[in-house]
Amino acid sequence: FDVPYRCFLPKKINNLLLSGASVSFSQEILFYHMRGFQWSLQSGEIAATAAVKSLEQGIAPKDYKWVGKLY
Image (cartoon, rainbow, N blue to C red; front, top):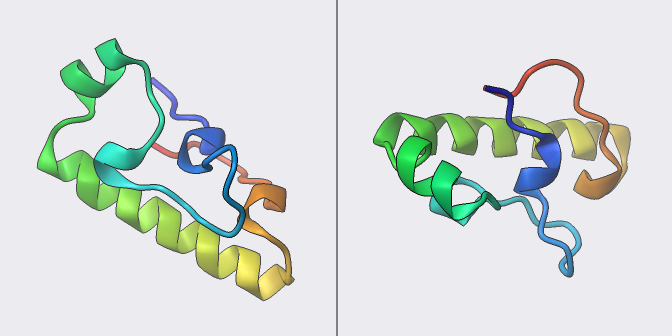
């Protein structure tokens, strides 16, 4: 399954990316698929990549357009 980039973005806080168990998912997805250690490492890598790309482009993470699959 694909993970939308918006799952890494909190609704009310700018310039913040979520990773690991903090990522926004429904309860079923979180507990059955995303609770593993491997996902925590991968989501941290995704958040870090988005942060660097946002900084390079001089934009906020919410304005960054992720291209490709996240997971």
